Length: 342
Image (cartoon, rainbow, N blue to C red; front, side, top):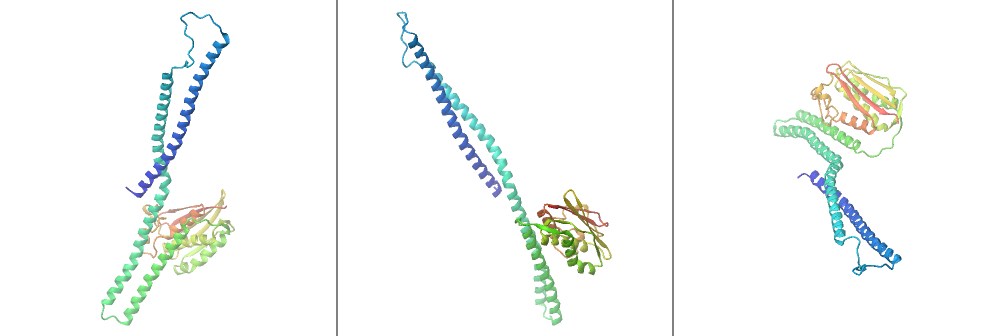
């Protein structure tokens, strides 16, 4: 039995204990009140009859008339006992029904309550497994390369420098991966953030400036048409969002192409598009493109670990926005971000 199922059963049992305590207590009060009321009514009727006789006497009774017994009961005691027994049986049946319905409802509600926790645990487990796999790859390459060269008795200074250069490259990859993992973890922490009014034009300009050297190296031109928009947000994370999107567009676009950034305001939201002339994304990849560590077939030859778009999606989510991509192989991609103004 899984931990989730055990916790669900325990939570259901706790629900039942609380409900049955309330139900049985309430039933006990109801039984006492109704039984007491029956006895009170019977006693009042007896007293009323005796009072009636006493106020209208003396009567000329026949010789065989038996005087009214002081203990005379209007309602047969057996009937009274039977009524109480039926009342008790009815309350038991009602409580049994409540128990059955509560068990089913409690099990369902316990599942609903625990499912987000279970999803979070599953997501964390998958994240750790994926991160371990991604960390193992460069570490294995690093270890293998060192071991092979250590066995080489003819290793000279030039070969040693080449080895160290290759090792440094792998270490840089590891550092990039660890930085992205820390960044994604911090963004996904759902810690409350005090958003301030930020200038979207300035945010995008900073991102473009940071990514410009990479674009120049790839001979890619960035056209920034975003002007005079402001919204509530975290400036640092929004800069990171546009760096990720621009970096992604540059990495998966051929040389001598262009990237366009545009924005418009509609229905209390700012809609931003990042359009490139890249290789495009296949239909089978497009549904997974924002998943952690996911890399499409076209991206496997490029550096990276498939965390960038996952970071971008989390930033947009934290800003109560949405992000989507429209793409076709050979025709580029368009990323659309919709962010609330307030």
